[in-house]
Amino acid sequence: MEISLPESKEKHRIGITRVHIEEDAGKLVHEGDIASSSYSLVDYNRCGIPLAEIVTEPDFRSPEEARIFLVKLRSIVQHLGVCDGNMEEGSMRCDANVSLRDAKTGA
Image (cartoon, rainbow, N blue to C red; front, side, top):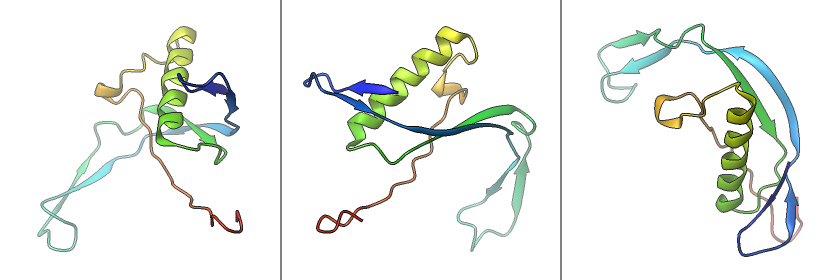
């Protein structure tokens, strides 16, 4: 997918590695933190709800590029009718995994 920052005419390509279908699972809810909680509850409210996970290449150079990518992706899934893209209700979520590069070696 190509994105561009508002202040730049340069387009930046964000590679999509894979898209796969999963089911949402239940989640554990703890009173306080997990180590000191005297009990845990299991929330099954979203259990079994289908979801699509989209994995990208580490092509983002800034948080702003990630935001622009998500806005464009949201627009696409809304246009296709596959998702209403309502982040407030959890219809669309984003989990960021951050990788750091060594500035000297690039590795």
